[in-house]
Image (cartoon, rainbow over all chains, first blue to last red; front, side, top):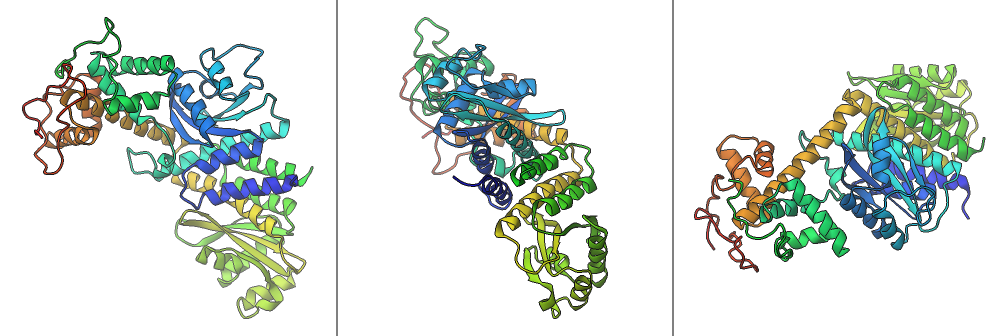
Length: 250
Length: 268
């Protein structure tokens, strides 16, 4: 077992060294998980309470959790962002308050037993959330909680500092590296909106429903649409689908 | 308070100071005070580069330290000056042995009772904004871990300073980030619609949108928004000029009604 001060020194060192390398924001996620004894972590960007995507994820479980939140539009990261307060669920399988009815069962099946989300905020400005999870139920202790708050503030400030150097109108390269903003989902939504003659927003809902019902990630579904292996009009006889023409919105 | 707790408190304290209207001097005073509390050093101070390019003493944990730092600037020699110029850390230099390097500074520092000096750069990527000085009364080396911790604390403070100097508020930066992401998303949605409607792949769909925007002096994001929201006709977009080696997707696994290349599309 390492001494506590070794741990803190290592964490601070990792945060510091991050500023010099070019591995995107992954170090922030790793530090967040390590400092709090979590199994994994993610940092999600949100705007107007809509998930934009993940800046970084420590592992496949973190990717799964964020994809679920993106596809379902509910979860701890969204709640922390919306409320501006930490969202704590030490026992996701048998919670004291039922929330996230669509997300919780899938997350528990994936081995996520506790989740803790901390808003990325600087004053009144909110960027998203740092979300930690554990493979066993249990609360964060006081030190871990304080550490998570500190990491969230440093992460928020780091994200904005990186963005400050980006050319006008673009996302900083460091923020895009390792991030998943689900661009393929938006491409697929554009295609589906033509296929089903509906708005892009409605097409996004359709893609989300399809992902949920088929128990596949919305990115996978969308990739199939973009690669023309899947059409959402072809699968719903008598539904909203059917013929579309390239000129419907012309 | 344990050292661990003190370090975390310092990090939180520095982070808490990173709000919109913080005082740079407050942040750097916290930094130099905590270095003395947490690390095995007797005095600490921070120099920052001013907009004109000259170094200034901004914070010091003691009057003796401040006097010595000012002396460094007057004589233009010493660890902080060298560290700032090189951007590299200077650690564990015994002062009595340094008479060749900084003859005037070493003489004065030893007279003030300091026998070992350390200076760490305050930088983010290639930009060096200043240096953190740490002086010890006793000779001998600073623990390697202390150096790492000091550099980490300095880096957190540096983020605050660079942010402050950019004079762009967190709210503005956040909305720029959000707008940039929104633009990307709208462009991807427009690409998807053009791709489905005209049978082009995503790359060629993007080229077609960009080409039309250029031809008509439209902003790419505005054109993409019109396409994504359905207010701009896709068939009305200028066709792509023929480009050898790149062709439209000419067939589709579905024989449904969707595949109807418009006449102006380049054919395979």
